[in-house]
Length: 592
Ligand SMILES: Cc1cc2nc3c(=O)[nH]c(=O)nc-3n(C[C@H](O)[C@H](O)[C@H](O)COP(=O)(O)OP(=O)(O)OC[C@H]3O[C@@H](n4cnc5c(N)ncnc54)[C@H](O)[C@@H]3O)c2cc1C
Image 1 (cartoon, helix red, strand yellow):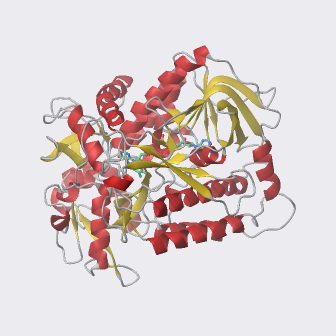
Image 2: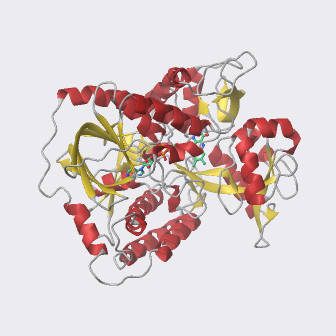
Image 3: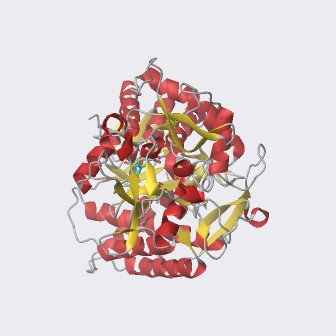
């Protein structure tokens, strides 16, 4: 693994720094490196990023199996997102998906193939032909290891292009001079040393934040560091109320069973063995968008039609792939079959899999334009970029379609990298302010002031419990108000926590406390945005406001953390709004 450290000092200088070595970060680094000196700073080794867990595939209208078009793909994306998607951005996504997939193929990505040797494609939820006539084969895949292959392919290309990697460096702050980037502050895991990166541009590609919730498909590192760091620097976050629950997480564990299983013909059944999606989405059935499938499962369970779990209540349903036959299970979803055998002692070719909705994907995040530049809709923060799951372009609106995240990474990671390459040519580095590390130093001082504090575990668990119970698949005012009170209390409790491990080397206690703080910031912004939006749209489904309300709410939420300097505890938030681009298709009711 290539990892170079500056032997002279703790300040490093580059044209551009990419924070995050997942699919979005690596594509941005690769593009930027074609004309700039680029470093990737990543708290994980790049190949361990969550992108590596993506199973199902990457959507692109190649038309290899049947007729397809980018325009249909863009329409499905807009409709799937319940019309909160910015439509020109969705067109860019769908059109550039095609070229980006061929580029990955040319870089050597080993896609699964059709009998004629073309890139194979399968069905996925919400992806249709002719604006909703029926499911279409659009997802390009490499068995059920698509994300893993994307990471390996891009990482090799970055090494070839002399991108410099700072692995296991956790970014803890951004340094801004007004609205212009000066650099970032990082902590090196191995030594505990603080390193500053001074650069003309920084692109945040820190991934998602499923760890806010108790049952999640997301890896331990998905703690939303990038959005939280920018929120504390006074930058608003967009559409934070929209968080996707994937319908088929392994019961109690949350580990994802890819939608590819249903794409190959798998069926969800309730406790009585019924194919219950017939009641909720008569045309697309099990391939309806995820928000609808998750709600259908929760409704079946609430009506007493779930399957009896360990707690002797009816709290999960079956995902049945037994009729697909062993050949399909072993060749199309081999990793899933392995997970089920390992964690459940269930062979999916013989028995159905127990599943329940699992917190999966952040539609909201750092607001950007279609070149990755961070903007609140008016002004741009110069030199500050974001791409991938931590960003909100917005192409997913209120609900993301399966396979569209990997497309988002490669299309907007690539565009961000291209823009940076040009931007750094016309600009100079800004001088670092004297107090560049001040915000981080204050945080560190509070955690190490010599007092003894309780363990962080209960605060982390209480946050996940309240977010799961009150800001989950179904929401209402009383629940979300409770979540807000709980999170504010937990933010006060956080002020009592202290570092228990004083060693500088591999101090995961310190880095974990910093991540917890990030998650408490994002929980606050998410619960507040959700309570504020008095309608149901996509993944934001309110029992007390069950209808979509285009008159009042066809707009993006921007939420700002007020008084984002210390003290951490009880902080107010401020909302403002931005119009949605509906320049191509008029919003319609969503039926499938
Ligand atoms: C189990 C699972 C399966 C999925 N399957 C699919 C699928 O089939 N198709 C699809 O389209 N989408 C899928 N998704 C969603 C998709 O994989 C993710 O949205 C996407 O991979 C996120 O990529 P990213 O590059 O934004 O972030 P990630 O891949 O999560 O990478 C984040 C990077 O940021 C770094 N980082 C984070 N914080 C810091 C910090 N403070 N300092 C420095 N570095 C930091 C990490 O080290 C990491 O390198 C799936 C998601 C999951 C969880």
